[in-house]
Amino acid sequence: MDFNILYFFTDKIKIYKDFFQSVKDKAPFKVEIVTSKSFLGGKFSDVLKKARNYDFFIAVYAKHFLEIETDVKNYLKNLEINPFINFLYLYKDAGFFKEKSVINGHKNSFLLYKSDNDEARAISFVLYMINLFSKSISTFRLSDYIYHSFKTVVYSEILQKKKKEIERLNEELKRKNMIDDLTNLYNRSVIFKLLERQKELILDEKIDLTDNDIINSSLSSLTALGDHFSIMMIDIDHFKDVNDTYGHLVGDAVLKTLGALFQKEGILRDQDIAGRFGGEEFIIILPKTSVDNAYEPAQRLMHELSELNFSGANGEKFKITLSIGISEYHQSDKTGEDIIIRADNALYWAKEHGRNQIAIYERIHGKPKKRGKATR
Image (cartoon, rainbow, N blue to C red):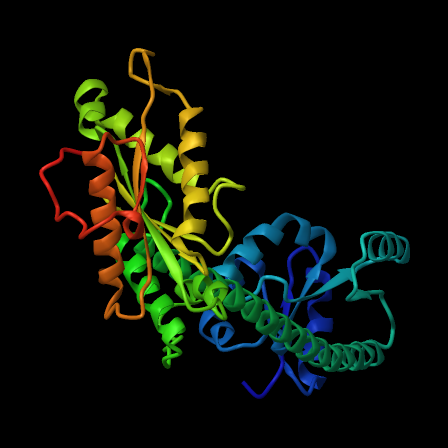
């Protein structure tokens, strides 16, 4: 639309119909003289749908507008027009004009009064409306600019929050793929990756640090750690009996408690890495640690565990013990599995010699026994 429209509602002020017609004849903008009923009947709906807020005013007798305000605003809303459009409130006497326009804050108001010079009164009204249309355009454009600027800022904030939330969820998903849900320790696949990287660090080989941020954060504590490291292979003694006697839920509680024990402050160092190897087996990587030094944290684990009492479903108390096998990395190891095999052999030696003890592969004379038939 390239013109402005003024809708005169003649309800309650039909006495001024001639005045409205005079305004219509003299105004450089379009004037429609209607009743509120005909306006709400949809006569101008096609035009209004194409209009912008500053394209039209509705001039209505103030008292009558209080009666039809809800209907008019709902009608405009149904046409997808912002109901906070420009209304011009018409008044008949000075006292009423001052009271309503000042106290209630009616911005656009015009006092109608009888005059012998109807032409002068019409011209005055037309000039007033030209001024209002001009102000309306400026106000609308400023408001529109502020609104869209604010919306852009808000959308930007929302997008940033959404992005951070997506990043957090992706990171959480990565972590879930790396963490054993029951014990909250690293799972088997992650332990193998960290073990290989620990070996590569010692060999001073080129390491790809782009695989996973969480692994890299764990690996960051392994840099410049010397030319050796050790691992513990840990198995819960007679764990099958726990499940058979007290049920698998109690068995899960035991595994969960043991996982928390590995992460308890003072048991292991910050750079030590604990993981669930499978079932009731666990593995701990001890950077910059010889087998002799690895013996001490293994003892701490067994001592802390000896202080704990576990409860069955009916409240009966029981204890558990651990068998631990330890081995140290050797330069001849081709893969991380080599040290695991030795630590596993030491673990089986401990189980075959009474359980509830620590066995160090390098201290066992002769070749370590192959996996026997000892029950876990």
